[in-house]
Image 1 (cartoon, rainbow, N blue to C red):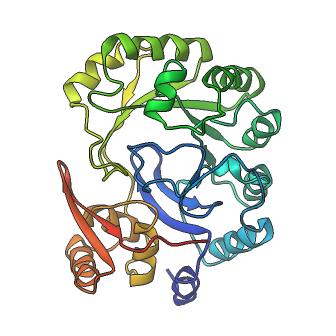
Image 2: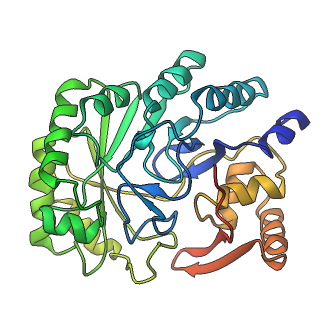
Image 3: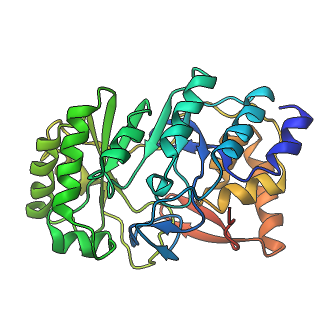
Length: 321
């Protein structure tokens, strides 16, 4: 990575990463809403508790500014496996997210992914915007209105039935790859009878792939508990097609060979990572990653939370757009 790329990345407002993704490889994130602006307040969310619980769709960040940053990233030799529209909240709340997806596609051959919680798919304009993505990863983790409010803590006026109908409509209208994430929490929505209800709804939507996920990174609610791998493997068989379990990051290390403290803090403001994640993302040695993270923790910019698969680091101050 050139010095000019470092200088610009330190000042990025809308791009972050590339980050190591368990599903997509090295993913350059595009963040379109302030922390944490969302239609849901999911206990399992790695970004944290929702602070702006809203259905208001507007241009939260300027389209031109986002695409200008992306142009600068490309010109500096940026590399990623995929460009992911996601980040600090629900991206489809941005009224012009579809233009950003199409603008990125016009500028490079890197595929794009929209990571959405599905809540606004009942709106035709949201489905039209989503269709500009190479992959749409939708979510379905409930089976009726009551479970929808419990699992996702959705805005009260949202209808679970309307959301499912919107997903069915998306599948009919969209010819690209549609993946579905089912997020399970122990003791909340992992009972086999309930998961079977989710699986029946998923079969009617017909996604190309179904992926089971559970709490791995530090969640918004510390009480959100992990479903054991053995249980997930049994529950995966209830789905058609059979669900996949989300594996560890398998992407190639980054090309940077160095990382600034600002870059690391900005990434950790959007998602908790381990020292190994940081090393893979920035192309630095794991010992160097651990030293950087230790220094940032000692300067009170990060906190650390031990989990089953390692220690995750989180930024103490969430970055606002």
